[in-house]
Length: 99
Image (tube, rainbow, N blue to C red; front, side, top):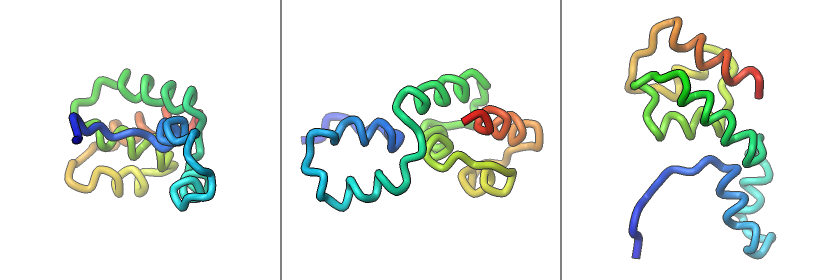
């Protein structure tokens, strides 16, 4: 039974499934695409939340952590149904560039 659903960054998923058999396709996927450690992912999440931008929903926050967008085009791909102005995009990019 599912009690609640919450999006998680790949780094946290990796930590959660560490006990599973490492020959699963999920392990291969995470190994290939997970770019940050759990600590760095949490630090990035904290900094993104510190922007206090109401347009950054939980789902977008997790996508930013997983994809680490490097330019405005990549940010706009994540925020496909929300319009961000240039300063908001630049604020996200400036936070992500340190990771």
